[in-house]
Length: 364
Image (tube, rainbow, N blue to C red):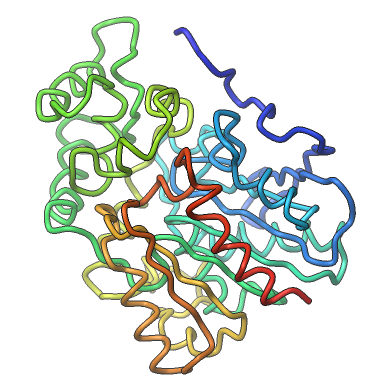
């Protein structure tokens, strides 16, 4: 496979001391935080990626990425959490029963404790995306994450909503892949398999329904999430190299998370996946009642053309604002979708300044 940009490169963040901070979760997973440090700062920023993504979505070298933007604009101590949904781990490539309850209960509190051991009582601002956002908001609502100064949540939070076709896929695609085809995960890179594998065949079939471009990974991503051609972003918002290297930025994904999303979509808000399991007894069966107790101000953001979680964050903001008027904010970015909010070639001009305004407002 020819790569135009090295896999897992850190070249997108110049002039920063980069260090890895490993930690373990109570259920026995080894995870890690990456720190991008120019100088100590009283306001630390923590980033959380989405499902099958990683820290790489925040440090892309082909454009001014979020980490570099924050470092250049006064937030000089930025951390990124690779939790159990990260493509940097193999957890999604074998059968597992992990859900967002595991992230909310085990990953996020352990990560915050590891972060606090280094930064002490400095203010922590969180920017989170996709199912990383849902999981973080669940942890907040359940009282498992504390001491957070502010949150920027992209695309979805506590009220997941999906397009009708995406809901159809959540209902039928998982049992088809898992039980009929024997696939415990889906990988956007199947089309690059060097032999005639089952995954390569699936990729070729999916591409038959996506004439909008000639990048097989893009087609698979549209099959995996949302509804559209393409589903995750608008082509015109990406650098062409970003479009071509989607297989480096998105990895394989286990199907259990889809089952949890479906349960939340049916409920209308975030709920526990298995209320009968005593492992999760400290978590609420329904996370929504705890949302009104979240003291950290939240900026709910989303693309106006979001074909993955549609108006989820608009709904979450409106419902939460009715409970605690004036505490939180909402911003919809016209012409953007789900993923291009972070990966867009002009995100540093059209997206990140809104994040910065919110962070500056809540500096401590």
